[in-house]
Every structure is written in C-alpha cells, then in structure tokens.
Length: 117
Image 1 (tube, one colour):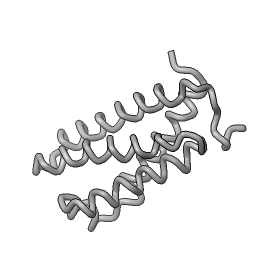
Image 2: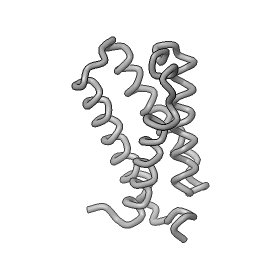
Image 3: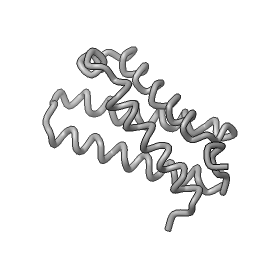
Image 4: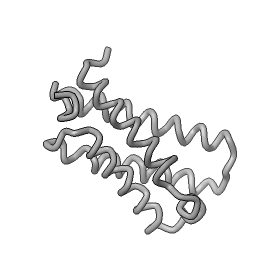
C-alpha cells in the first residue's frame, strides 16, 4: 500500500513524464533521438520537470534517477530500431514502472511537496 506522500510524488512524476514525452518532445527530437545529445536533452527535460513538479527540493537525487532511468529506457527503445505500437506500449510500461519504483522509494520520507503544503 502506498502512502499519501508516495502517491503525491507518483502523481508528480507521472505528469512530468507525460509532459516530457508528449508535450516537450517535438517531432524533430523523436526522429533524432538516436543521437546521444538529443537523447540526453530529452532526459534532462524529463528530469527537470520531475524535480520541479515533485516540489521536494531536498530530494536532489530524484532528478538524477529520473534522468538515468529515462535514458536507459529510451536508449533501449531507440536501439530496437522499431516504431511499432507494441514497442511504444512496452516503452511506456517501463516508464510507468520506473515512476512507481521512484515514487515508492523517494516517497518513504513522509515529506509532502511544497505544492501540497
């Protein structure tokens, strides 16, 4: 069972992921993500959004883990060389699993975000 702080953090991470993957990732970035600088920029955007929306300034490791998990998942997706619905769904499921794990781990401290306080 997740606590309120874990749910609060999970929602922030989920929204950050959705914004990073579907709003702040223009078509040119999707098409050129096999280039490492483009992939890193995308992951930096995801990490920055996660940190900002999480509103837990003491959790400076959180954006590092978001960056790393996003980079690994998207690197694997890019390496498959496929853009099928199945690959997309597996990619999103992996991101969702990362969100759940990160929310569970970092939300254990009981601290609510500054946005809830």
